Image (cartoon, rainbow, N blue to C red; front, side, top):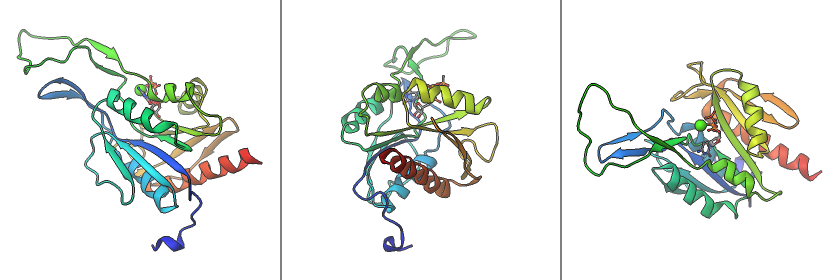
Amino acid sequence: LASELIEQDLRGEKILVTAGPTREPLDPARFLGNRSSGKMGYALATAARRRGGDVILVSGPTALVAPHGVETIRVNTAEEMYARVMENASAADIIVKSAAVADFRPENYVEQKVKKEGASMSLGLARNPDILFELGKGRRADQLLVGFAAESENIVDHGRSKLERKKLDMIAVNDISSAQTGFESDTNQLFVITEDGVVTLPLTTKNHTANLLLDQMVKHKQDRVL
Ligand code: CTP
Ligand code: CA
């Protein structure tokens, strides 16, 4: 579709998107990771760019190609993502945190490849920074801060408590107990929660979902101005 046919409703908006998993290294050969493919975040960055946004994407390791026209910064660990997000946060009008950030990292990085000894082993883990919580603490009132959450039960309750705890304007929650809306899928269904209530988006492709979620954000910004 030629860009002149797409409504440029994000023209002039600086949009920071995070996507993908993080990888927390254990030794030179191994890491702790998660099943995030990055598809939802890349779809959001692509759609926001097509709608005229000035988009920066901070991405964990994914198999995806950097979206056309989007400044893409690649990171590995949660701590790297935290650093790159903070560098770019204050200039952003809209921040969308679709990355699946590891909550914990191995307490100690082992310089040489770990050898197997004995019948079991345990791994000490340390808490990673909660990037979105820190963004909520330092936020400007005129910024739109949007979180994501993947939940397997009590979807809306968990979403609402994260909305409040992290001082977000909006959180998009998906149900990972369904194959059609969970990890690695090309489709998704989001429950979009704000202080005004819950909007249930249809089950559709991640590309269409990205545009529907951007519609909700644009509407939320307009409602706030009025
Ligand atoms: N998030 C983040 N930094 C972290 C963990 C999460 O920025 N260290 C962000 C995610 O990018 C997402 C939102 O917080 O936008 C919610 O992530 P989620 O894992 O659902 O929430 P947690 O606060 O980590 O709670 P829990 O995993 O215990 O449910
Ligand atoms: Ca988490």
